Image 1 (tube, rainbow, N blue to C red):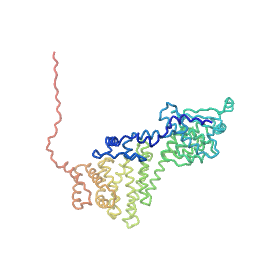
Image 2 (image 1 turned 30 degrees about the vertical axis):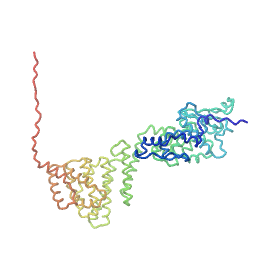
Image 3 (image 1 turned 90 degrees about the horizontal axis):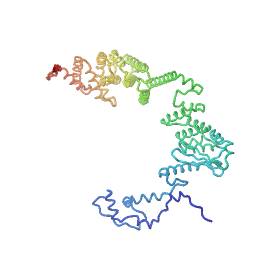
Image 4 (image 1 turned 30 degrees about the horizontal axis):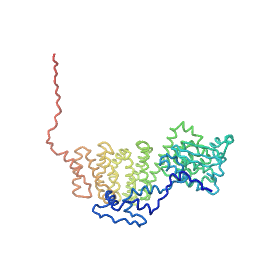
Length: 548
């Protein structure tokens, strides 16, 4: 009996390997030719001696031989690669398309191989339908499936493969083709689910992206059990943050409200309502958006209060950074609107609460109640954090005016030990930086009052701030103070800077160095301008007489 003929693909793409002993000596040039090749390629030092003659008895080439004969190796490696199994490409098909077809065949073979024993998926012996799946880019795949399973699980196949249609077919298996598939592999995964008893357990092995693809195909062929299983998976499984938009976009596109998609969307949106109220929500979007925005503000205000009242300092630092980031991102997502969905009044209400507590703690500490002394630094830190938020949102002007009017607090400030009070001067320093950088724009009277009320306490605490505050940018604060002073009238500048000059000579490092501001004031006030002032340009009018 003659042996069965070999497949043409194997004959076309599988090349036999030549004997190593006969081709080895013929495929390599002489040692001096190899030496010149390596030298020209820059692999050897020009002063290196030529290599020794090649040992032809060696079973494999050396690294030097491989580098010197790289071109000779590449064709050999390409010829030695066997052709993928079950591949029947067109003889004129591009190599890239052939590779993708082979990869698809390999992935499908893995899927079929992972089926449990007894599973009839792609069983040619028992199937009665040959289903061909063709992608938009030309990849195709044929599967052996069963009409009764397709009809029982999919309303799409129930309509297409009806009993009447089946009786009209003259032979088995029935030939069916689905063209323009987005992803042939996902179609195969979806069809395989029809043969599974526990769809949910099967989906547990997949990731979110694969389940979204299966959900899209299941919805297209009206595979209800597949749709419900995918939605149950998405509702229960954890997602990456990058998957939020993908899930929401697909569920919105598929309109699966009656299938339970609303429960999945509740994980990423507060605006999801029951399907029966969909039309009502669409007719009143402004009311829904308003209530949602109000709920968001309420949550943010609550988070602010929790951080401000926290007891553990390390946890408070971490959560302050987190809340600040959330507020920043929330404001940016709303087009950079001032305050985002957190109103200015809510922020100032929190600031006023901190300021009232700080004043009460100062008064009690001065009265002899030392239990409140430790809380002064915490409330001052809270104010500093809130001020950062206000400055970032460009709404800190009212805070500066309020702080400048705290004359009573500034008066009793010196009665508390510096170790407990220096955090208060960090608030003043932040205001100096804000004014000096143009982040806070207030009237001349407000700036003068700020310096009149808080400059002396700031001087007294500067040494403690410099030593105790980690990461304090001394030069930034000094530049901010200099610029704040230089925004005032020249006479006020002179008064403040002469007083600073005397303090600095007696305090040294414990006093901020605003020498740059002092020099600017000196040049403004006393330098004689030797240059002649510019004369205004003269306007010459020349009469033009027309020749008659």
